Structures are given as structure tokens and as C-alpha cells.
Image (tube, rainbow, N blue to C red):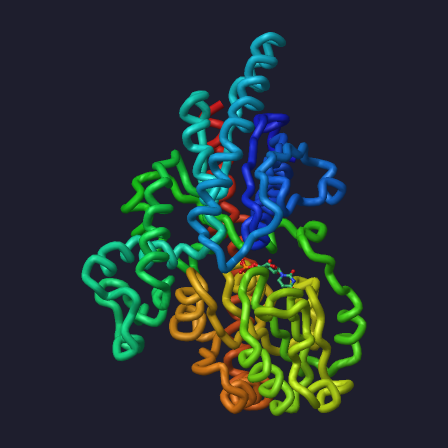
Length: 453
Ligand code: UDP
């Protein structure tokens, strides 16, 4: 537990209510706790983490006044209200803590460091009001950032939303990205403007913690260090650094593991599009028939409500269930890390969310890439074109799907890709070992925090 200098020193981690952000934030908390720090997790009432899974943390809920995240609604507005609703609550809490520290002559409790999710940008203002150090935590890929930062210019040049004729062309200055890989390439001008407005809220923090690995994104991390002119600590993959209890908001269906136990090694395709992506009825039907026609075993996560207008799987095409009987399993939410680590899983068909990407890399599982929005488009390009451990799904059509599945599960192409994925897994493991890049970066982060106490 650390080297004594960190013991009990307070870190306040402010999480946001998105699954893909909460999970790595809790993992970061576990990692820093193992270094000796005392951890408070500040979270919204919406999508609260389960405190019983983390007796080592103190939890502070903030009342956000939301009942759910509506992925189709105005994201910027959601973030704005969320930030406004949480600001004074956190400021009052920390003011009280500091006052108590002063009264008790407890120097330590007057020097709190705050680490916050980039979406919870209100924290920068609170930290500045209270004269506390703050660090931003980013749970997306680093490669997404240059693309995101370039959007206003591309927008001003009239290049957004991207015309069909431009989709396959390379974007100047953003190699290897094509226009189709740009985050929000298909979105309306209005939404693009909203996203830029959100970026303006993000002030300069004192440092950035990135859930990534240096060897994956070395050159872009170098560019970002030059751009931000502050320390950037690449300490991922956090899913490997902190193998803790479940952090899922939805109940994990663990029965699928005994089903996987009965399958042959590397024979199953695992399909999951994360916690937010949605699809329409015809996309559901193409996915279903693609899986059926591939003739391969599959584990398919269909989140309740993820098919527009449905509760769960009532729109599955007629005849599908009979055709795949005994060969496939449809479930509401999987224990994904366990699934990817299972010997029976040969391929991951993913939306390429950054956590899913890192989890797949950590287990050496090649991917079929079907990005939905935002950083997923960038991640998909890196997986397929740069790291060569992913196959881009060109179209969501049953023939294309069945063909892609067979290419990776049955053909030699899949075997070669798995070899590359396995060597990436080894490199990722090495980064966490003594002397590895993430190991060193984490120690540097600890020193950085200590220097501010
Ligand atoms: N996940 C899971 N079970 C599922 C689907 C997803 O546990 O059935 C987890 C997955 O392991 C990952 C997170 O949910 O940690 C999704 O995060 P990601 O960044 O991949 O995508 P997002 O949900 O943010 O789009």
C-alpha cells in the first residue's frame, strides 16, 4: 500500500453517469487506493455505483435531478444541466471538509486533490474557487482528441456533415483518418455546434490522466503533450490494472459463462454494442440474419430498449430463434470482461467504445468493428488500419456480416489477426509490469499528486 508518503492522503474522484466513464473511474480509484491514497467517489444519483462492491471507498452522491440518460436527446444540454446541478453541492461539501480540517488542525484534509471525468467540467471552477489542485481523467482514446479538436475548422470550411463522395478520402492533417472516421461525421450542423460548445467549457487542468497505453498511441500522446503543455499520464489499460468487482449498472447475466464452457475453443463470436448505441428494427433483422447465416456460435447482447420502439427482442425476425436454436444466445447484459477472457470466444463484434477496445486488446481477441458515433469511429480506424487487429464492417447487411464473421472465425485471415492481437496483449501486459510505460506513468502520477500536498 504505497510507500507511506501517500497514506490516507485524500483524493476526490468525480465520476459521470455513463457506464463507459464510471467503470474506468472506479478502476482508477482502486489503483490509487492501492497506492495508499484515501478515495472518495463523487457520483450522481443517476447510475450510482454500488458502494457494497467498494468498501474501501467513501461515496458522495450528488442530486442531479435526472431519471435516465436519453441517448437521442440533446447531449450538450444534458451535460450543461448535469454540471449546473452538481456544482454547488460539491463546492459546499469540500468547503465543509476543509473547514473541519482547519478546526481539527488536520493539514491533510485541507489539501485535497480532485480528479474529475472530463464531462464533469464544473469541477475546474470549484477547484479554482477553493484553490485545490485538479486533474482531468479521460476515458476515451487519445487519438480521438486531434480529430475532435479539428472539427470546428472542418465545420467552418463547410466539410461537415461529410458528403457521401468524401467519406473514403483521407482528411488532410489527420492521417490515417478518413472523413468517415471523423467523430460526428454524419451529425447535423446543429449537433456539431453543440459539441464544440461543450469543448469550450473544458478549461486547462493541471494534468491529464489518460486510460491508454503508450505503445498504442505514442505519437498522438506526444502531439497532445505539445498541444496542452501539461503532464499527461498514460496509465492504461485500467481494466487490467484493477481487476475488481462488477461495475455494471445493468445486471450481468452470468449464465452465459456455463454456455460458453460447452463451446469449442475460439469458436464463438461475442456481439455487443456497449451501453448507449441503438439500432432500428431493420438493423436488428440484418444483424440477426447475418449471425444465423454465418452458421457460427454466437453470444449476442441486446440491451433492453436498444432497439428503437421496443422493450427488448420482440422485433427479432420470425424464424430466427428456431434457426439458431442451440447455437446462439441472446442476453440483456454480459459480464463482458469474463466473456472476452473465455477460451471459447474467438471474435468480438463491437461498436469500438474505448473500454471495449482496451478489454479486447487485453485478451488478444480480434474484432469486427461497427462504430456508432464519436470516438468509436476513430478507434475503429486504428483497430483496422493501424493495429490490424480489426475488420471494418462495411455495411450492416446480412451477407456482409456473415462473410465478415466467417473470415475471422473460420479463415486463415482470422488466425493471422489473432496472432497480432495476442502480441498486442503481451505488449499491453508488459506496459503494466515493473519498468513498463504504464507502470512508470502511474508512479509519476503519484509523485505529481504528492508534490501538490
Ligand atoms: N459491458 C458489459 N456488458 C455488456 C456490454 C458492455 O459489461 O453486455 C461493459 C464493457 O465491458 C465496457 C462498458 O460496458 O466496460 C462499455 O464501455 P465502452 O467504452 O466500450 O462503450 P460505451 O458503453 O461507453 O459506448
